[in-house]
Image 1 (cartoon, one colour):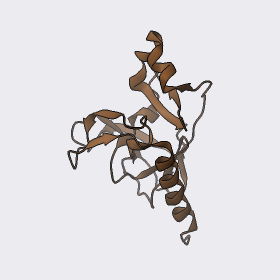
Image 2: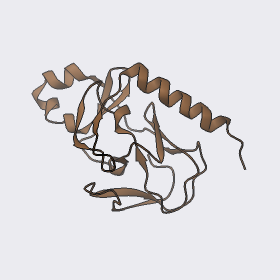
Image 3: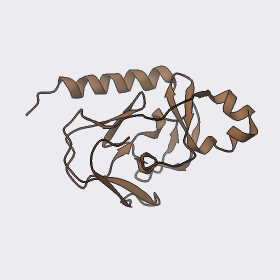
Image 4: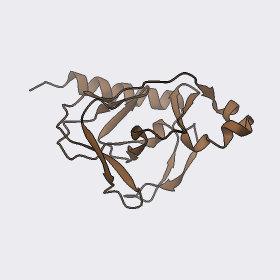
Length: 157
């Protein structure tokens, strides 16, 4: 569920297709996207072992530890693109503003938080050309927790 007004338009990221753009400013540390309608999670092994699920693996997103959701209906949240310098912070299925975001900002997250540990994304980072490789769970949660704590501890204007 996207909690601010937005639009879907051509991404500014080369090769990314469409992106999600904010229509209004968002304060640093604010929740921009919250999970909803999640009725089931799967282990990566469950997804890969079941032919009906494995064909949907490209829609999988790590939720927590080694549990993943599948989004074959492609909601608008799926237009949040990857960046190694993201405007959004992925943390336990929520996307927080990773700084003060102006209207017109394209919302991006670091896909390394969403992938299985060691999983290599099918495309590379548009800016650096580097592979996007999934973090281990402890690395993902430790880094996103530290960043969220820093965002929330910063003085508010």
